[in-house]
Length: 319
Image (cartoon, rainbow, N blue to C red; front, side, top):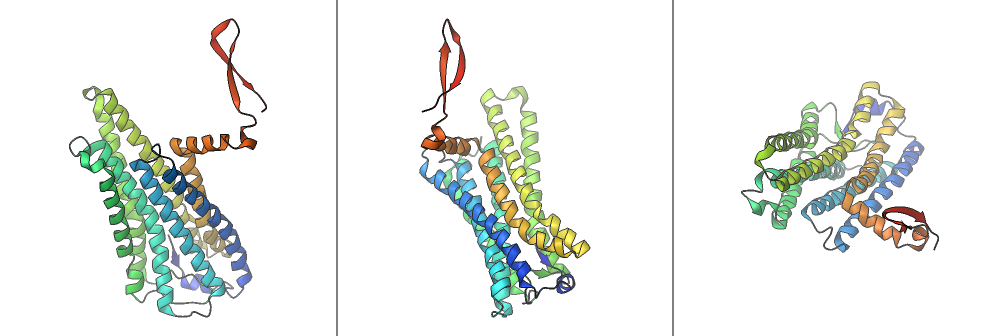
């Protein structure tokens, strides 16, 4: 949740740009890590055929692209706060807010279409097989970005956002209608729909019972597990709003600067969890690391115990 509390921010010694530079440097480090991991995911999925050429990994790539876009907008805002005081144009500030809100909305809505995809596979695929095709998901991704860039247009269509020296271009808290719209459309609506889809798939799996085949029940449980992963990764992004709320309540300088760093930290954690939670991507990375000489020096070799062919022990050998 990104808003500007005008009175609280103005009470801070914002003219001390050294603090912003330190915060910006820390944020930059995590942003670079996030972009590198997101780019790694894109390259792995693109080059690993056909193992990672699935609809699920197509949507993971879409989220990775949204994360890169979000990181770029974060750094752009930091650059203008620290170095861009020559650009005092309100219109420019509104466009920075527009792309920044589009970045976070793009990430959250990318998780929404992942949930919709799971709903297609788990509930609707029996009667509508075309919903599980790549073509359908390309259309889904295109619709997601069209919606994202449309719902964030109030940032540039209204005059609520204005330039203030050393302050990020967000919607001020004194424009309560715009703040409510931002929280509802960018955060609450996609999260609520994801939770509803999760409940629907959960109910579908529980109702399956003995009337469905083992393969069908296994597929539905797999969809439910994928949706759990989506909820875990989404919850990481939702923690971004916690520090913002604390700052609004306390007007603490420390919490304010922590809230500026935390988004880039969250993106880094989310990207690492994406790799760890996705078995296919994790195994591909692990296999590629085993080919590196310095990593494969201590690979494990399975050898049978003499006299007992059914028992094996693992022995570590140096190459």
